[in-house]
Image 1 (cartoon, rainbow, N blue to C red):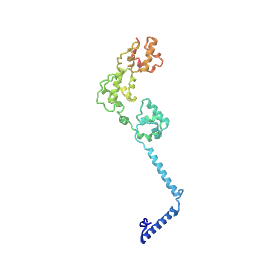
Image 2: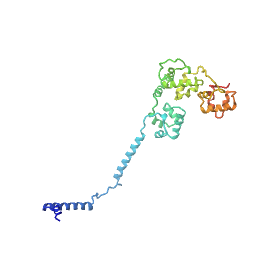
Image 3: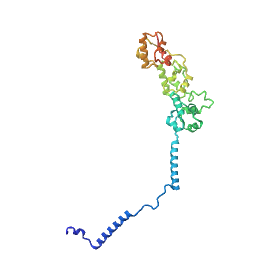
Image 4: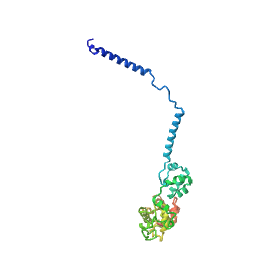
Length: 297
């Protein structure tokens, strides 16, 4: 016992302090356990004032979402998707009309053209057309539509500095082609490259086959440049031409080339070039172009 006695030896004032501390801890614990600190009155969530407050918050949320959705940024109407069209308030039929028009390689270049293609209402057109963003050259052309000189200058983005060296499409240079509104360095190079591939334009609407050349721009080219003289195309004898040589025909792919050779083996020799039409699956719509490069001898 003498071992523990020094640890419990206190004077009178220390014992009183320990006693008061123990009482204080006991009282504190009793208060925590038995005293209810929650408010006596519960908040009434269904009170008119509380309901009005929450209704106002809900209205603000809806207004915020609506404003966010209705915000429209400038866009090119030629590239409207199903999702974008639905956001603008267009019907599926109206969107489909535009998509079909675009699949044909055509473009709308004004709000009137857009309405003509999609048949949207005047009210919707007035709502969304301020956000239409066309290429700069289209915008400039549309601004000059009503000017007295617009008809005379309709084929040029501005008065050409370059004097045309020819109006023959098969002799036109890069600089000649660049005088046409909408044609720059790339397109003019592409036209000349395709012309070389064809060995010259023989049919007027061959120009519409140039990749990336819009119909409207091709129309401008055709209004200025014509086929003055047919090109001298080196034709191949369909009965002796090799497979590789036949594939160089700009309108013949591998499958068609194979069909022609199979037919040639079957008949031994084509007496007339028109016999190509007898081949099963032959693209009749390309016949006039294909025979520009072939002859039966």
